[in-house]
Image 1 (cartoon, rainbow, N blue to C red):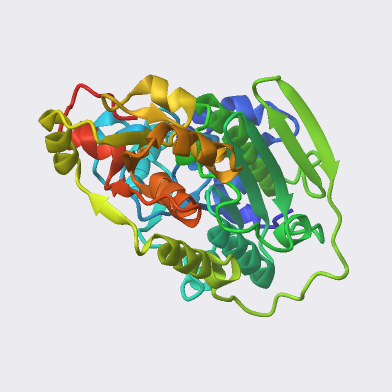
Image 2 (image 1 turned 180 degrees about the vertical axis):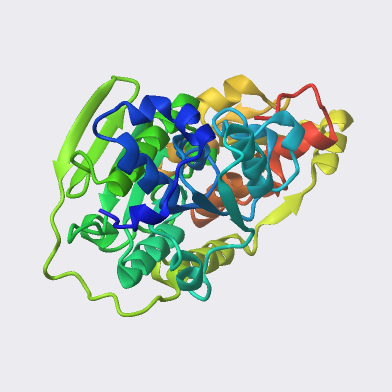
Length: 390
């Protein structure tokens, strides 16, 4: 529980009107609303989770909100990142978020940090805030936020989402566990797909982001039982909640300083290994592929390694589907050999990464091939706009 000097906090006439439904709640009341007004919250990320939680923190009357993000709004964000609108596509997310926050609550102070959070700047950015809310989607930043909160003794309100599932908890609060008690070390790079690869149900973000906002408010006003020591698991498809107990691990490493988190998560090594695998793989542009298809030649097979539901969304004419997971488990290798039947191989995916990986595996099995640079996304943008871009 945070302990501001409430005698120094005064509610205005507008505050009484705006927060009347809070003020009549005994658990919030006048003191609780003053605590919200005195509080400062830093949100790391303005994506799927940051969007709803920022909206509700601003509406609840948080006096000062900080936002860390360096990305711009993309049209593919709008399915879940409800703080942004179509008119903001191509513009900084933090500016879009600030504009929307001030529409909801013009009395909220909004501080922007248009930068990538790093071990060099994390402590200086986090130190002036009472509560930190983690709305990120990658392991290096999650570990960085956690460790900075531990060093600064800040509550870390955590959430994550993927496909139809989400989880939330409060780390580093009143002696409770932190992120390293849940995940002492990150999984191998590539083991956990991103939302861009695996997808995410848009409204799932609202549920988990709303839980994060709720926990943040409870920490500030000192009411209720927080999720500290409990990991809440939510399955939207089954509409089920589960809860796991979390306890501090006495054998966890002592956090004494911030480290190089990309190295810790194995990202440079994974990129180097992937580059080594792909370095001898030839590439062709979508324009070259179009010329080849228009030539009428039939001495090649165009292999699509995306997932079946992606293939249903959009296809390049004449392509044959063999998903990357099938190639990775070996069954697809034999299928590709059967399909080729002496023809040369050209492969593509959504943007070129998965097809390059597939060709690397196929090369290890004696099958050479050419990768289509930019995949079907480049095909849609440069060759045939009628092909849906997703």
